[in-house]
Length: 119
Image (cartoon, rainbow, N blue to C red; front, side):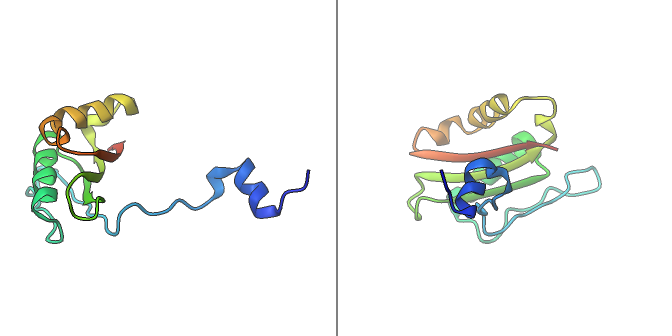
């Protein structure tokens, strides 16, 4: 069977293909004792800011991005978070931790895109 070279590569080695960026910007910050708790980025709307603040308070992330990907209606969010609280914890448990923190908010959502990583 003959497959064109790009299709063959995508079929056999998907890890070589570029991944699309989920977020337009990434806000990295330090949460060490020398650093003050950062304010949410100015581009976040009211609901995104509330999610950002709740996750910041509960998990003290080193990287956090919250974006409404529902077109502005607030029914679906993309969240990318890196935190020391995730160290030694598998991905399913990391997602459960975030779900517990945002339990009340999630009740009103259609869905959530979640990426977690240990710091």
